[in-house]
Structures are given as C-alpha cells and as structure tokens.
Image (cartoon, rainbow, N blue to C red; front, side):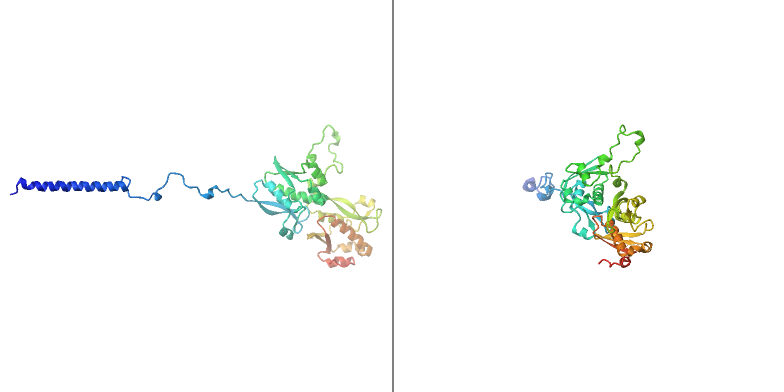
Length: 372
C-alpha cells in the first residue's frame, strides 16, 4: 500500500514539468513576436506589399504630347483633267490647328515636282512661298492678306484668264472649310490693291447698295455702264477675245480682237466656239471679216490641253463649207484668226488642229505640212 509520503516526490516532478511547458510556450511566443506582426501572420517581403504612398513617375509622363496631324486640301489647275478656271484638289498634311492659314500657306508653295509631272500647274510656286501675311475668319468670311510683292512676282496673273485661274485656286482652298462661305483678299492690308492688280472690282464695292436718293426712279433698272463692274466672275462667265481680219485697219494676215462672254470654266473652247460663229452684223459693218460665220458655227468637236499644247479638233465638214480657205492667202488668214484666239491664254504655248482627230487631214486641206 502506498503512503502519502511516497506520493509527494511525484507531485513535485509534475509541477516542474508543467512549469517547463509554460516556459517553452513563452519562448515560442516571444520568437513569433520578434519575427512577425504579433498576429501570427506569415512573414512577407515588404517589396511585395502594396503601397499607399506616391510612386515614382514614369519618365515618359512629363514628355510633351504628340501634335495632331490634319489632312487638308489645296487646289491647282490640271489641264489634263479640265480647262482653265477648273481646279482639282491635292492633299497636304499639317500639324497647325489653324487649318485655313495652313491651307493657304501650303497653296502658295505650289505643286510638288511629282504633281507637276502629273499635269498640275499653278501661278503659285517656290517664288511665292512665304508671302502669306495672315488669314482671319470673321462671320464666315476669310480675310486673306498677302505680301505686296505677290503682284510683282506673278504679274501674268493679272490677265483676264490668269486672274480667273488664281481666284479659282484661292477660293476653292479657303472655302473647303464649312465655317467659311466667302473670301476677301488684300495686298499688305489693301483690299483695293489686290483686286486692282487682277483688274477686278473689290467685293465691298460690288456689294455697295445704290444711292436711292441719287438714282431717279425711272433709272433704277438701268444696267451699269461698261467697266463699272465685273459681273462676269460672279455670274459664271468670263470676257475673252476672238480675232478677225479687218481690212480697214490692217492687211489680210493681220487680225484684231473683239470681245465675247463665255461660260466658265471652259474659256478656251468657248472662245473657239465664238470664233466659229463669225463676226456679228455690227462688227461686219465696222470692217471685220472672217472665213467663219453662222455656217461654221457648232463645228468645233473638242479641245484638249496637254502640257501647254492645245489639241483642237473640227468637224470634217468645215472644209466643204469654206473650201476657199485652202488657198495660200486663205489658209494664212484662217490660221491667224485661230492661233490668235487660242494662244491668248497664258496656259497655252502651242496649238495643233485636226479634223475629228486627223491632224494630217487638216493641214493637207490647207496645203501645209503638219507640225512635228
């Protein structure tokens, strides 16, 4: 039988074991507290933790934004695609947000070498590049101001046909934008100087209402005197010349111009059509004479411009209507009238005639050799 004295040592050992257990647990907890966050969470590399603070900026964020590119159009003549006064667009790219200014600036540079090889032409070129002073749009009207030297750089643009071509290119280029409905041009701020250079009436004078007090009621409908205005540009027509012989003023081979109004933009074909109608009755009374008359009217088949050469084709019936034109003096008179009428335009350097495309037939009729 076991006594109480025998049990005491056993109880002491149990208490010591329990104390050791508590001590070990404390050590473990202490180690965890040193290496963790006190919650028993696993160790985490600080680099993997999300940060609430600001991050280093991307060096590219401070760079300037890329400029926006815009595709615009400029308009030039192309005689392989149409007649004088008719313009065709080519594209340009610009980063200038002021698109009307950019378009006119690009127009003044003129066609590129490649575009000229494709038949595009213009009064504008490297000689006129940089001659734009400003473009200001107000109430739908583009007010375009050029350097005064523009007029002296391209003086040929002041001819009747030349001014029409120049204005067609300018108007089409400036009015391609929906907020522009009209254009007014000036040289060094002088509107009158620009239109005087082109032998036209300034728009502000054309728009000036008549003085009701100065105009008698019975004369309100009287048309303006010749030269008081230039309605041809506004109404879609142009004033050209056709050339006839006038024996009261010169010899048989000398020709003189009389004016005709023709529809735009085909001023060259319109001039030749008017020539084939012959002099009017009033002009015949003034001494004008021609092989052409009402009998030859309408015998123009086609006119084509290629690299400055006008290719003019007539109805073959022309030679039967005016057979005497084939004489030596007759052919000279006929060609003088044709050439003077055709070559009055600055865009035409030479001319070749044919009967329905047959060049040899035309010159054989006139007893001449065809041009090479």
